[in-house]
Length: 324
Image (cartoon, rainbow, N blue to C red; front, side):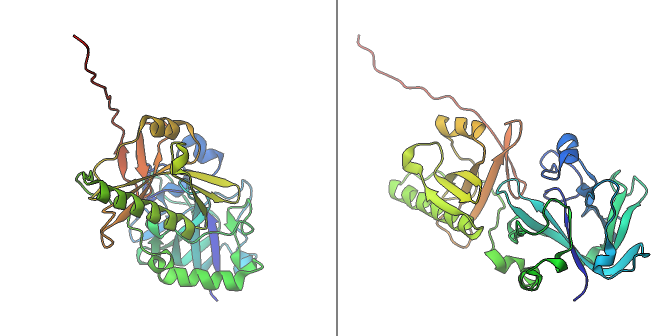
């Protein structure tokens, strides 16, 4: 087997620089404090190449001799470098992409600052055709909790269950869409409001079923709590993590959804609150599930494929007949 290493980075959508809807998360205090990091350009083309980074503890280098290099070598060729990150919507750590046929360096290398969006450091490089960034729905291959631990460099070939784990990984790598089904999370235009009560019920059931299926496939135990009027419909639990899922179904493509006052207030206050929207709920070919998280400043929602959904507050009123 060719040498392979897993490197932990921040979670992003595109890794082509920081934008309003694509900030890095989940990679330690530097990223948390600065909303930035060298990995934000891991899939930004520089000429014919990608240059990848993962933060290695200060004063340490990668121990590429554990991959077959000599202790005197500064670089090892033809390595599979797999990047993984913590999913801010679902929790857990998942593979986000990889470099095939990569050069992997023992210590950080530098480019001209302007070449890599003013983030010059890198540890790995490969030709563009050998780099793969998974879209959000494809990021379904999870890193085991007893795998890398606290270190950002996981020498996976030394893992006690490496043979079986890597067998499954390479099956996933060959066809990510088949690993968990193809949950397409792209948006559209239009209104999904359906006046017919029976059809509305069917839409609601389809949305609940799709959300339950998705989270069960991700390894969660799912419980229906919608009748308890908590402000969310489902609870998804995995080990010490608990997600609160408010589910909305649309009979057409994604235009807008309504949150009740209770749901909206809970979305602002409750940790782990996610808005799950199934558009085209009764059309299996075109139905799409959106998993949405409110931004840190409570100004808009971001779906897990990077769509930005703005919050428009509305006021209702009751009109009551008065006596003459």
